Image (cartoon, rainbow, N blue to C red; front, top):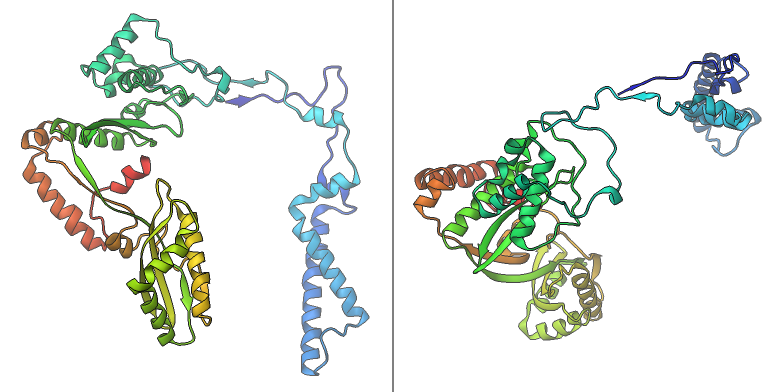
Length: 444
């Protein structure tokens, strides 16, 4: 983009308007004013430090000030204010004189003075179009396909005869390919994608491979994987990512699982945790509370107190750990369909208030002591579980491994041993010895 600025003369041939500068508000040149204030600051600072050192030697109170010291302090404040506002001298200018509207109008760019260097439309091989995005009202909620070629392409993608990642190379237009892929996904799933805008960014040629499975083309673009056959039901998995290879690899995994009859799953444990940390005068008192809390006789009473916080939160158990005089109590409870950290925290607070009666010397340090452990990797979560603990099973045959995953069972097993298990151990990975499960979870 190139910009053309107006001439300094007006259309009527009048002399150019002299524009005021921020430094015009100062009585002296800018470089001289800066030098004066810098010299004032350092000289006053040296004077005050010398005076205060003398007062310390003579045991004179520092708050007793002479007239020269008061003047030095005022001078230092003035120099500090000026130096802090050095890059905002135009603020001083606005206080001294405010230019009229004509001065600002002379600075404006004329309409139509911006020239586009290259506005030629092009397919995916064109550079990224930096034009501003269209307004939401200008984006059609439903794409209308008028040509027979596009309609036939949609039917081919739905039938599976044309892979969706080949649309860019066949059509030569990334936006048309994304629109056709969206329509094919709508017809396959029976769900509307009208709420997901078709982006305004024109893709480069190399992004055809990177975003080949993207259903929409935006900075927050995404894709879909599936169908995933899980427990006898088919699921389409939307993925909010611009990493097209991630979508493609996940799609291959879904295809392999689907071809082999699907996967089965079982929820082993479902509970959310919160672990406050409390402190006692002695370690024995902390041990007494640990024994009291973990005693099955007292669990029913604590559960009643905990469950008052919510209709859905139900206490399942308390696991304690001692570190010196500090006690960490890990409360585990079910939270219904919610993640439930607020209801768990309220229940924990109720129990702490209840325990304060029998343990008045208990000092609550924090409602969370990181033994939960929330929003960070921890071995206790991997061992004890936090949230839903699930086991899944899928049996992938040798033929599917060769045709879909493009490898062999022996090579896949060897890679799993050397990468996911041995490599993760060498790296000191904290549980979850896998390739990139968190990458998929983040996209979902």
